[in-house]
Amino acid sequence: MSGELRYCEDLFNYSRRESREVTVGNVKMGAGHPVVVQSMITSDTRDTEACVAEVLQLAEAGCQIVRITAQTRKYAENLENIRDGVRAAGCEVPLVADIHFKPDAAFEAAKWVEKVRVNPGNYADKKKFEIREYTDEQYEEELGRIREEFAPLVQLCQELGRAIRIGTNHGSLSDRIMNRYGDTPLGMVESALEFARIARDEGFHNFVFSMKASNPKVMIEAYRLLVARLAEEGPDWNYPLHLGVTEAGDGEDGRIKSAIGIGSLLADGIGDTIRVSLTEDAVYEIPVARSLVKTIDQFSGAKVEEQVMPSWNPFEYERRHSEVMEVGGHALGGTELARVFTSQGKWDAVSHKIEQMGDFKPEIVLEDSGVIALDPRDTAAISEVNESSTAKLVTVADGLNLAAIAAFRLLASKLDTRHPILLKDTLHPEGVQDFQQNLLQSSITIGSLICDGIGDAIIVQSEEAPGQSLRLSYNVLQAAGARIFKTDYVACPSCGRTLFNLQDTTQKIREATGHLKGVRIAVMGCIVNGPGEMADADFGYVGGAPGKINLYVGKQAVKFNIPEGEAVERLQDLIREHGRWVEAPEQAVEV
Image (cartoon, rainbow, N blue to C red; front, side):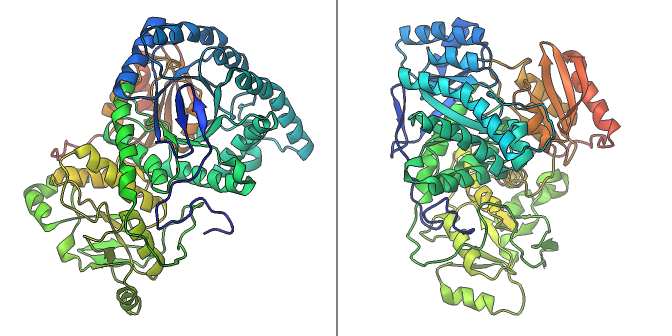
């Protein structure tokens, strides 16, 4: 592992990270308690009746903690009425106030709810996209100013028995952090640690961390680095972690992206509470989150007794340097595209329409590929492959009593780098009827390994339906950033700050732009995370005011206050202006 940094006890054997207990109302997290499921309501915080109804609906669906935005003190004042309405209905689910820019809103909110979420990037800090060098003295002066704003909130939460989430977002790092650490996982971690030190100096420990990003690779690296840094700070820095991929989107794409980020960390024993952020009604997040928690059972397999050094750096993504070889008429390995395999049976089932399947066609038949399937614990079998004069395509054999992620990590660590690896989503391809379960399993296993830099080709074995297994294969590769074959969307979940109907608008934008391969479009309800999360996007559509939209190129706003009814068409015009527009092709056959 990189230097002395460690984020996980054992990369080949599952064990859950030990964390201290944090109490949020009647819910306890960390310290071995089951992973807690959270969500966030979308109603306007000033609408008491709507907020109470949505909280009760989420609680009924199995949500254990509910978050509510409180963008100003006026909004925060109504949390008293929302809380009273929820409690009067006999519901004891803890409430969390989501605070970004307004310390006075946080003070008001702490009076009424069990937990306050603050974002170090914009709570008492600046975000004006200024570029300047900070001397050490100037930097300390800024920290002193932040202490003056944050310490009183900590003291109030201590007095009232509240919890705090120190929640860093990749999209809203402050100028001070950006100029010293860059737009990096390290910057996210250092931003959170600054606030944590203030809390600890006040003798306050009832807090959790989060490191959210819309890019699963960034999110995974940030959490891993945070865990490693907390361990460096000392054993009493073992605070619980809240996991989430922000702006994951909707439909299969949102579920896949969330599963890659959250599931990869759960697979390594990291995470005490989770929120799946979908651009859908919040109640639909709960079954996905609950299913993700249930997948923890699949991460344990037979113990890997060997002492093996990982062949990758968990804190910095780099694809494994395999050799390029030709398999089934396709170049595979090296920097070539990650290839999509399927079984002979599935190939036969779709062979009559392969040319009409568009982006979801199978590329290589497993049985014809010459792939070598072996047990990564079989040293003799691996030595035989390593002694070969030519590169071989290798995978893990089906039916082994190893957890799939551990098995492929072990294979990658013992196999010479030059040999490409075919990833499988499961080593037990009996087929499960529940498509969502298959989607989550495939996303976690394949996505986790790709984010480790492992894998040159993939096969989804859990899903029996040929078309769905192929669509799932490509969508996992897209969400993991391994093969961009369609438009990529960064779409935030709706909340009380949202200035337009996110679900309807996202669907309209998809219909207008869904054919633009490789173009990344951000759809943001407000400016809280918009400009930062759009740093990775080509174009952005952001709520600027009620009924008005601002359009971005990268993180730069270029069109302002466009009437909502015209904004999708103006977005298309903007894409044309920058030479990224192509006309939509004829519709491919649905698979």
